Length: 156
Image (cartoon, rainbow, N blue to C red; front, top):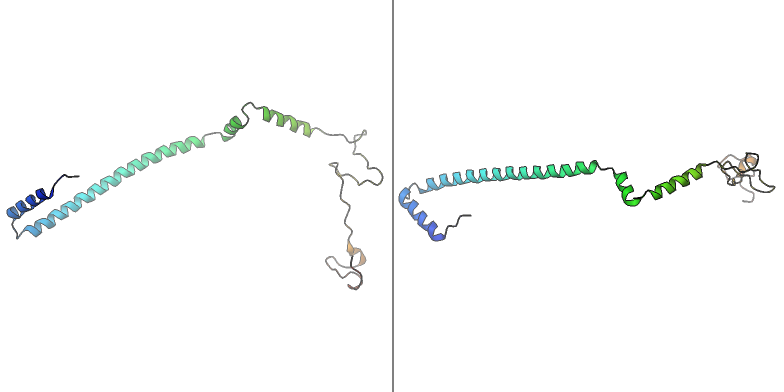
């Protein structure tokens, strides 16, 4: 900051004591301290203003970067890195078209009839699960484990 040695400060203090005198020295020092505080306060406000301008400039740069990222088409970027030739996409589209083609299960255009003893097939060609047998047929209400015999019979 200022390159003042202790000897120079002592010389200045002696000159002020001689010029101002010992009687008015405290008043002069208070006034000097008051002005030093004002200068420090102004310097602090100036520094904060400069810091705010720098921060706003940096924020503007960051905002521009964020806006440029927001305008990026991420699907195109991913496609460019994952499948640059488009070969995988074409293969998947062809497989999807092949899977969507209707499949005939019998010559007459309808669903194939199950053989004797085979489980019936649903609309999708898979076997259907057999229907559950309900115990409600014996007169008990649903959720009642006692059955028609009042819970005295054998359990399944």
